[in-house]
Image: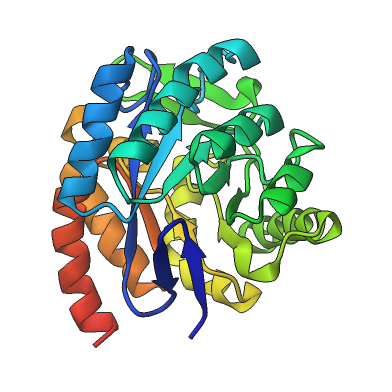
Length: 286
């Protein structure tokens, strides 16, 4: 059994499903739960901690397919005060959701104890060094998002179309291995690497469904696995439901991913997913 300490909490992979609660300090979050002020973001983070979140993931830039990039200054202004306050008010470890090395560096200084990089160390050349020097765990995600493949529908929101892979699982594994190589070159310890195949990030609805169906095939990479199914486009477009009506689809995807060996689920609805995960764990991790 592999273990790692994140902040004050020990994580024993394979013993239970851990939940990463999402705190979006953004006005344009795809999920509709973005917080435009620090007080509401902090209150939301504390509420997720009460509901059973094992990690709080604080992000200041939307990752929806048609989102506008955020400047370094704006991202720092959004997330650093929230991280600093949450670090003082809860013992739940805090993750910063960013691909910018300077945001990660300042977030760690403010109390974050984990980095969630949606570009898997490939977007900012300094990110791997920041993670290595801070000796904190990092989520390395596979991402092939490109604006030219983004499509927006009024009711169902954004999704990716026309994205091609030679072999989806093999190609995603190759990308994840490259992120691991970058981490190792910078001196990131093996126990601090967590992998995320990137459901919905540069993947069509059908490709995201295939990632869920074949998620267990990433176990041979021999790292803890994170999945982010929450309110995603593959749920909405499959069920023909807007983002605010995707809870049941998210719960179904969560149970399927737990059955396929996900170690962490990144979710908006912590209370509901916690209950579903407890039952799924009782079946697959008796």
